[in-house]
Length: 285
Image (cartoon, rainbow, N blue to C red):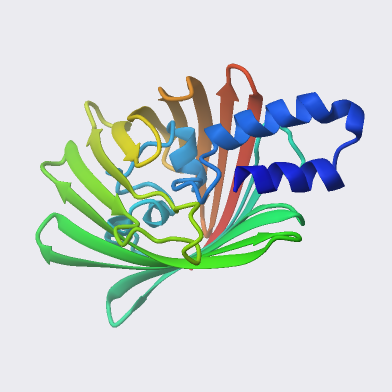
């Protein structure tokens, strides 16, 4: 799959004199981005916490990474998201998500597109969550993966994931995710979509301060240890910080909830590739 991407981009996008640099950047970036439908590419608050927070019930649009978090989202919401990777014009994410309730069951739906006119990945996700025991929530999602590579055709697959969240006390919560358990493949051609597992912990040592720690593992790479912090400066403003051990990247961001509007911003500082920016805007009703 990576060879196809490189051939397409080299042929259609880059002058020949930039060929060595192009190959290096694309190989490096695609390796770091887990190019084949990388899980956990948004929401903004999750990215700003160092891609951690699957146990944080107050994480805005957290159901996208852990469907069990839908239980804690009482209001309806529709959100738009945009992310650019390392100031490269061809590496962008566009997403839309909504959460709502039907017969008191919290539901969510999201659509994500990554790439450009030569190569793009699309993911359509449907989420639901339930509470059977006090302080314990269970969530599930079904995802349709679509891949389109110009001049190389299309491929698709279905995946299913499960998420859990349990609040041990007012100050401690734990969570777990098992992603793509059915081991989806893109039309059986290889280029497997990753099967992944994640466990998370949230601790609130003092009022207004939330600490998160996640351990992430997929079937292609080593363990990734992720650390996050959220501090409620005002009732409507939360500052976020984080660190991803696998790529040695520091992150920061902000969440603002005012009246019926939600705004999120995330910044990732990679030691070699530079800065990524993500913006999220939502309407709460």
